[in-house]
Amino acid sequence: MKLKVIFIIFNALVALSFLFVFFMPAFFLGWEYARVFWTNNWYLAAIFVAILIVLNSYFFSNRRLFSALEEEDWDAVISVMEDRIYRKHRYSTGNVRLLVNAYVVTSRSEKVQQLEDHLRDARYGVVRKNALIFGIPHLLSNDGAEMARYYGEFLDTGRGEDRQWIRWNYAFAQMLQKNLDEARSVLEQLCTQSKPGVIAAVSAYLLSAYGGDSPEALQISAQTRSAIRNAMSRNEWNKTVEKARGDLHVLVLSKLLQDVEEWLYTDQPDQSATAAE
Image (tube, rainbow, N blue to C red; front, side, top):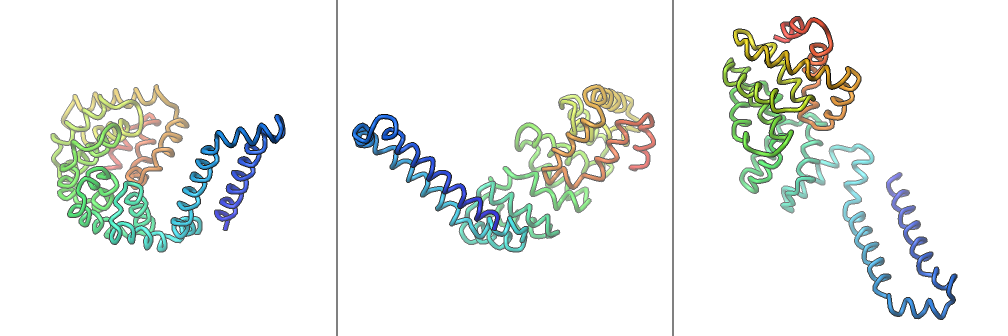
């Protein structure tokens, strides 16, 4: 209901704004000049009307989805998005991400896997582009071998933090399988190549917890921890984490991030690391 009211108000404001612009030449320069002005610039009115038609068409074509989102009716959202993707083959990133979000919110991780399987056959590039969100069921499974297989496939995918998160998930999968040397190698790179933040912190934390017989890994972990503590206060860290939780692949690590926070901002990091094991 609120969305409909906002839409009506938007249309009214846009219409009033156009009428003001349309009649302004008459108000200031007279009707004769206004007639000449609009005779020579009629296309401006045509452009305005076209834009208004496009915006209204977009709203009406998506009104069912907007209503479902407004009411947080996730079953309706899923119904709309499945129709778009499976029947209409509209594989845009926005459609895929919204459907995956709806599946996760309603605890239907098996549906994410089904969507991944469908897109691997229909549009593999969409899976590569959204490798992080499709990795959520694999991450939640805690199956190290399956996680390593999935994330290993996409190690060269994405850019910036997306690629770093894929690499971190791969390293985590290796640790679950006790392939510590492989995991440490990846985590050390993430610590040294990432700016102080969430990725660097979770990488350093795992190195601290599983560094064990590698003095170099423990040293890199300690240096990264110190750099993060110097770069941001605990309050700033919490704000950074809260912002990062907007991404589903970070949200599912909420418990780990609580442990990382304690490890970062207490004087007994080894106790936190030991407890995590």
